Length: 378
Image (tube, rainbow, N blue to C red; front, side, top):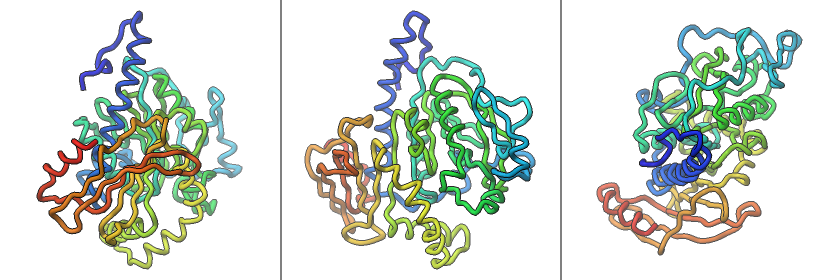
């Protein structure tokens, strides 16, 4: 990765260097993202314990204690304060002197590339981002947020306004926009893109509590993954690239059954009930984001049926995503069911898009040769 991002520019050359760094790094990161994900038939999402330590949503460490507050409530409103026009909801467990935006510890020498990855929970965001970290070869420091030497991955669950008990009190799900602090999210994404540091809230998935915010420094690539990175206009306006992982219900059910039956001891009926319970809020608050995404990774059942998949890379024409195209259609043999790749144009929610589609599965015993054949055709 021999790009200017690794050299801090002088004051005289800073503007031009930052612009070159940004324009060079964005297509690189985008190609790494999609090269790792789109053309290899994905396995069922789910993290081994060792993988989870490398990614996101780790507990913050130390004792996790509930604030005992729910927003809105008279008790929480009495403790509400405002700093630089940003409301600090006490449910985020702020300390008395903490500010949401502070100066960074150092100048990273380039404007960060900001990427949003949106999807429902249990749809493979963690698997996706683990592959990206691996592809970049980045070293990741342990902690709540995955921070590498060139990329930081922020889990947007941290911006849930209430903890698990608070949502039970309000009767709202985490998918509901009213349970997410979009004002703080948008302001902090903007600050990080401008080279500032932030005290970001923490949602502790182990305890279900909101732990005290953590200090987060800007990085060369900032990835914000979760339910709503493309939902709010303020946050969306800061993104250089918006990616939506679109899993149709039949595939989502198959994936969640495998994960939740194995890891949580659920029955298939419990999984189906959970999906159906979340469906109204998912349809209202999460799924519409795919209309505003620059690129969509869509997973459907293969024409040959599950467990094989049809994967579509849907790219907006004239959008931020560096277009991936095929020189010709391909048919790959050697395994059951084999795989076909083709490209075509279509309308996607009023947008002209180019779709690269792969149906089936490459021959895992001949993977290297078939990947080279695919790559030579791109």
